[in-house]
Image (cartoon, rainbow over all chains, first blue to last red; front, side):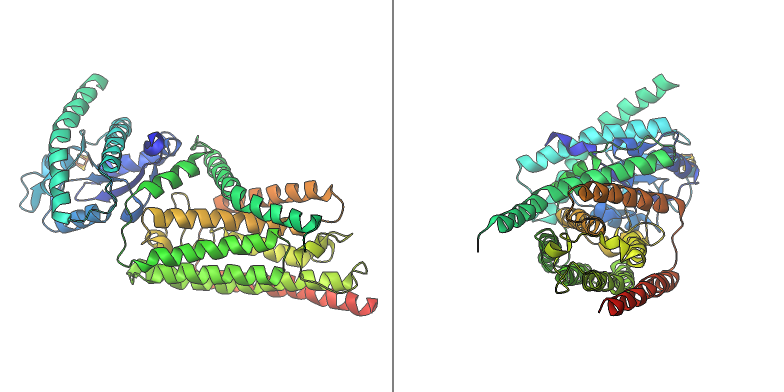
Length: 181
Length: 305
Ligand code: SF4
């Protein structure tokens, strides 16, 4: 189905962000940027979400939570790491409790760099995520996969799939960012 | 017995079952668009709710309890059944009892997962039912009494098919009931300030409360059922204005649009209240508007007799 990407619902989780990126994510939903015109809704519920948007690096305390939210989102889903902290750990990287970027815990599909990431680049990231989302959905339909039977198998799939996507999207985004600035 | 009236009733039921989701979806779309314009945003396309539901039906269904889907389908069935009874011209009391049964199935489906947020959500949904139910029953009784106060009717009736044949619009007899019904519509449509059990748009209440554990198709079913219910309830709003005169249908349509717009305005201008205030307000309105109206109707009836 072609229209599948027209209704992305997003769940936003603040891992250990300084709140800079969170404010920018919220700014996207405000009248100036109004992401709802693309059908994007900020839902607070992982069970309804399609896009997992994480800000800030992952620390030892919230790593299981990030993992759990990820698991609760029904397939197909994409993960968006917003901000330098979420991409690599950023300025908190060397802290004793920080594990690093979000990709240390769950497979990340799109990286949005910037400290703080600008609303424009967040929206750009979401749009990139949508293309991936459609791809994943089509793949799911092709494989005739409704409920994943074997969870371990499913996880393997995700990791493989994302490893290749990761590189592409981060490169693309990085170059986009450079162009913009 | 097959005659023209029965065929017309059958057609009305079929039209309801086929068209109600589209009407409900478009209304929802306009609701989101108008809300966005009120907040100085551009807002999504009017067809956005359909994209949402199509997407939901294509997502993975995850649930800790398989019976959830069955319970939700029962919810959908009873909502459609209630609407079909209404548009088929059957007993108004039966229609409202069916919607209550439907709500019970929604509550069962939500509580079948035993999680904290749905727990809070279902409790609040029960409070919402407690606030709406008396008014719904009163509206049915009000229509009944209006027919007995009206000299056109030989015997008083609950049947929608007879109610629409009256010479006088029911609103003349039931202004208090109408106000009370509009009030509970805000609760029924899950609009702010009474969206305490779950809410639409991007408002989040207890992580979507009663619908928190519905993923994919399950949530899609809830959305579609709500569209059906919305159309049915707006039909009841229309019933206050419909008479044997065909022109009254235009008046009813205008009234429905106005009421819906009013609900959007209320949604966008008020903050969510706590459950106890909602309870006091709704029962207050029921007693003041519904009660007074009931008293006056009784007096008129006695004079007529
Ligand atoms: S990237 Fe910058 S603004 Fe964003 S969470 Fe990290 S430190 Fe804060």
